[in-house]
Image 1 (tube, protein in one colour):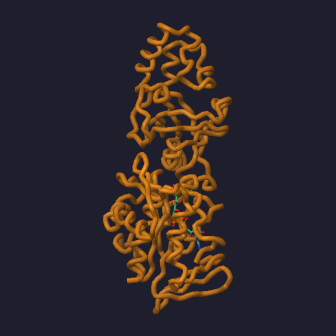
Image 2 (cartoon, helix red, strand yellow):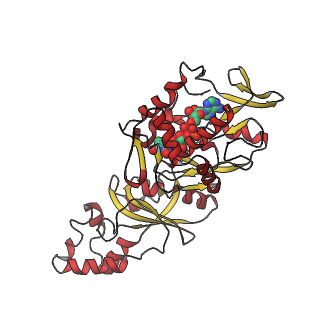
Image 3 (cartoon, rainbow, N blue to C red):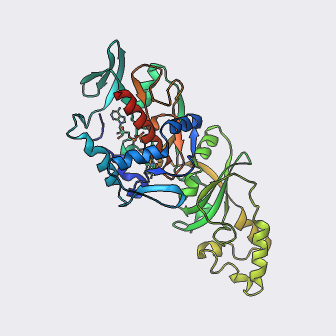
Length: 373
Ligand SMILES: Cc1cc2nc3c(=O)[nH]c(=O)nc-3n(C[C@H](O)[C@H](O)[C@H](O)COP(=O)(O)OP(=O)(O)OC[C@H]3O[C@@H](n4cnc5c(N)ncnc54)[C@H](O)[C@@H]3O)c2cc1C
């Protein structure tokens, strides 16, 4: 059953249409991460890959273990996943939304919003989270499961842009930079990531900013003060530029290196051109007229107050969801016999790089094999 009029609407939007389907490197999960690791011990990335290749999909691995269909098109993934359904006795019901679940002696009964009902000995729920409602995101799984006694960890938007105070961003909108970002909650380093960031009118985005959204959302939800420290020294070639999550460290570590770099440049460039050719002009102009010490501090630790995160409309995933307590990570069967849970409806969210689809696939494979077995 699918409430949308097409299958895989969200899948087609993933990875900018290229569908970053899985990740071949160390899994990175949050929320109930122990559970996620248990799931992957029963259905490891190799098995997910073998499953996809068994459907005919040809995969290619890029930097950071990110795996895509070799043809770089998400519709190839959708085609590989859905073609075997047709003609195999599987009935696909589009525009059909499950509204109510009932456990009966003979199994599970599902009622739909248009008044139909279906019964089966086993039921797999894979309705995702409330992220990206235009692509099908909804809280309907939470509404179906909480009355049955499942616990819900408050869903918050994750993998989305950070909203910051706007004035310091004036004139920078559209600018891309390589940076290391450290998120401070109540003045303490709480999370960090490195890679490309993008300035917008109302905040910052780009993969490294999006990776910090779940920590920012949770801290703001607790009423904590959240500040972003932007270190642009990767753009100056003073730090490595690999796109990755980093352990948070006290911001400003690179201020002395930046100061030495500026002093060296002052030997061959006039003071008003010290940043020329090293930083995009709007940012270089912004730092014009500051002393070398102040410039170095700004390059290594430019502070922006975080006022929020973009909402579920713009989030790729939800942090939080249904607790997997009682769910068997080998089969995905819940404590209620015959009821299987998989994918993003659970309180597991992954990092960018294919971890979210890989968790959805691994849990789906385990649930499917077990429910049918
Ligand atoms: C823009 C964007 C880009 C992304 N890029 C990536 C990426 O490159 N790599 C990656 O790993 N992850 C990516 N993600 C995250 C990834 O798409 C999700 O984690 C993944 O799709 C979750 O799979 P799922 O099957 O659990 O849920 P979904 O893919 O959300 O599927 C759930 C389906 O259930 C349907 N549904 C919900 N409730 C009901 C109901 N009551 N009755 C009937 N049908 C229902 C929904 O309409 C939906 O089609 C991205 C997400 C977004 C929004």
